[in-house]
Structure formats: C-alpha cells, structure tokens
Length: 75
Image (tube, rainbow, N blue to C red; front, side, top):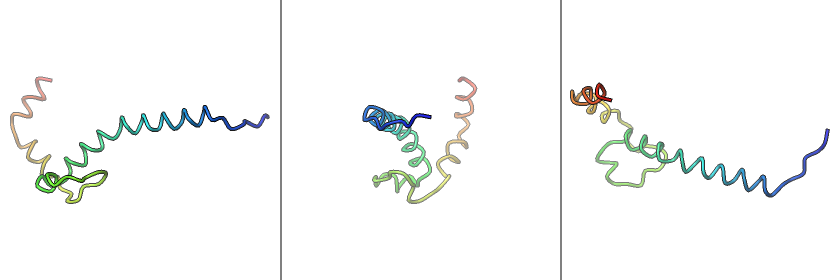
C-alpha cells in the first residue's frame, strides 16, 4: 500500500468546495433562523445562526390564513 503525499491542489479543492457548500447552505439557514425568531426582534437585525427569541407564532399565523391552502392547491 502506497502512502499518499500531501497535495496543495487537493487541499485547495477541499477548501473551495467547503466554501461553495457553505455559500449554498447559508441562505437556507438564514431564512430558517429569521422565521423561527420573534418578528419585532428580527427587525433589530444581527441574527446569524440561532434565533434570540424562539417562537413558532410566525408559522401559526401563516397556516391560519386560508389563502395559503388555496395557494398550495394551485402549486
């Protein structure tokens, strides 16, 4: 069995792919964090990975709206 040597090209590839993957995943995390946070607190900004005031009220408000179900039927 041969021992693999360190390759800067491979290290650079892993770094760039990790950076690319993070840039693709971060917007979804951002939207999820803001949707799970209190609306007034979200307007203050500076949320990154965790909501400061966790709440599911935003989802309850959306799903209580009868128009959302009609929109789901259309899609």
